[in-house]
Length: 229
Image (cartoon, rainbow, N blue to C red; front, side):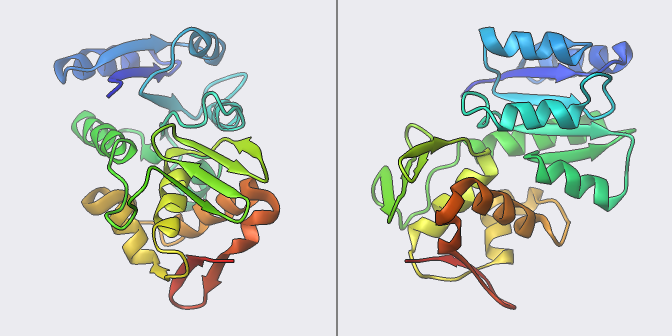
C-alpha cells in the first residue's frame, strides 16, 4: 500500500500539525503551501492519498481536484477535502468533483487520520466475494481490478476510487439491484459519510464518464441501482 500522503494548505500551522501527526501514525508526508507546487510534485511521484484545502488561492482545491480527476494518471488518487465551509451543499460539491471524503475546519486530527485510514482501506479492499475474476465486461464496459483500469467504448476513462468500487460492485452481480444502504456499507462501512445524496452523486458522475454506456446503470425507484444490458 502506498502510504505517502500529500497535504496541501496555505496555512503553515495546519501543514505542520498534519506532518507531525501523520508521521506519528507511520505515514510518509509531503506538504505544499500552494496548489501549483502540489501539481508539479504529482508529475514526479503519485501519493497514496491527497488532503486538499478547498480555500486555496489560484487554483482552489475544487479546481485542483477537477484537474486530477480528469487525468487518468491521477484520477485514482483518493482525495480528502478540508474546508471552513460546513453547508451540506459544499460537501455535495466536493463529492461531485470526485472527493472521497470531506472534513470541516476546525477538525480533529484524530478524526482526519481515521478518515485517511478508512479511505485507504477502501482503496485497497478486495473485490466483492461474488466477483471471481480480475476482469469483467458488460457490452462495451471493461473493468480490470488488478490494473485499476476501465474501458468504455474502447476508451480508457479515469474513475475515482469510489466510482471504481461502485462499478465493481454493480458488475459483481449483473442485473441485481443494490440498495443505497448496501452500497454505502460496502464502500464505507462504519466510516461512511452521512449525506443522503452521496451514492446518487457518485452514480451521476460515473454515468457521465461512461458516456453512452452510462445508460446501462439503471435507477430502481425507491430501491437502488443495478447494471444490465
